[in-house]
Amino acid sequence: MTLKELIALYRADAFDGQEQMFCSDELLAIYANDGQDEACRRALLLRDSASPMCTISFQAGDESVGVDRRVIGIQRAFVDGHAVDVVAVERMDCSHPGWQFETRRDRPVRLVTGMTTGKLHLWPVPDAPGKIRLTVHRLPMRPMSGCDSTPEIRQELHRALVDWMLYRAYSREDTDLHNDAKAAVALAKFEAEFGRKASGRNEEWVRAGGGALPGPIC
Image 1: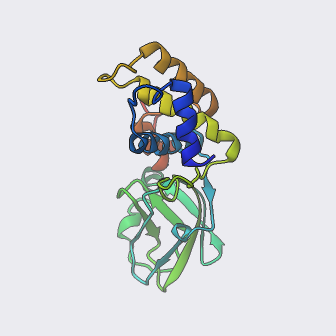
Image 2 (image 1 turned 60 degrees about the horizontal axis):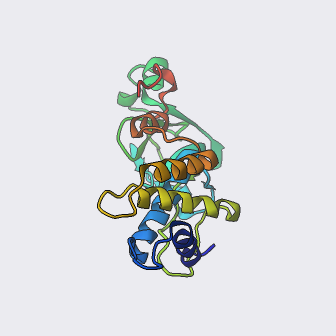
């Protein structure tokens, strides 16, 4: 579906716009993009190893590299064609005490998460320039904007984005469209397709490789 079709389907389901328009097309585009982001966070729908964000260059002496903000999680990693482990800082502290202060330099064999938001720390520190290649789960590359733009998730999942748009519209407090019961039904349909929402704290715990720690508490 195109963004125009998603908006049209929302208006047909919500009867929004026949006599009075409660949600503008601009607001509905925000809801549609928000729904796609939510779907990707919940169901990890977009797996990528080919986009530019999946190739990260480093120089000799670099202690860390930045990771694109759209990356939700890392599944596989290679340094100069060699498979490397992506491990949580707590695991590194347990298995290699003092690793962060070692002076030896070599080709990195581990990428350490959980030290700096949005960065991977290289161990050991590289002795030469190189490249990291990742396979990741990510958010959409860019928001839908024009009428003919389409969601990046698979075609058969597009219809469920309308359920999120309905949920957001029915949850608005300041319009006659507000309806808690209808909002709950729309959210339940969305969750049936993409799953229930995890907290941001849980997502960060997983992203940082928190398997070495007790489970998150919220």
